[in-house]
Image (cartoon, rainbow, N blue to C red; front, side):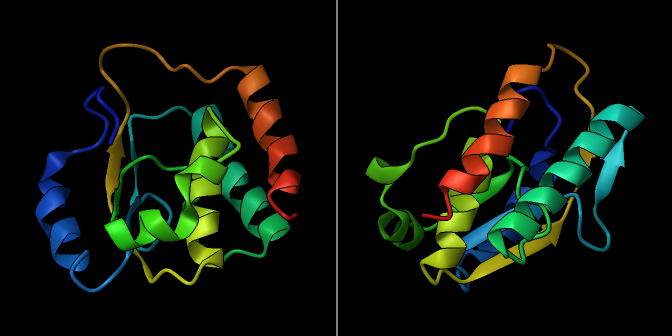
Length: 141
């Protein structure tokens, strides 16, 4: 989860409960009941288009590929083999979830409300976004 108070810890008990049945639990802004609060249109558009773009290119049904509020079982971590992760930055979230999906992990997305940070600032730059757009194709290998 993000350390800037944008992810509400109130979702943790439900995520832990779901982790008993699933290998990966995603706190999703993009499933029914999820969303964002106090977030600008540009950032919302980047989130939506980033997940949509990655999902189409990778043929992956996960709705919120770019979100950072996730729980992972040891089974999922072992299946994706962290030594083979090639991404950092924005693409890291996409790669982790995609590899979990491709390796047969049971994945559950639960709705969360993402609150725009009230302290700190985003580390996303044009370079990080460009890297993510390009690295997605490398994941298809």
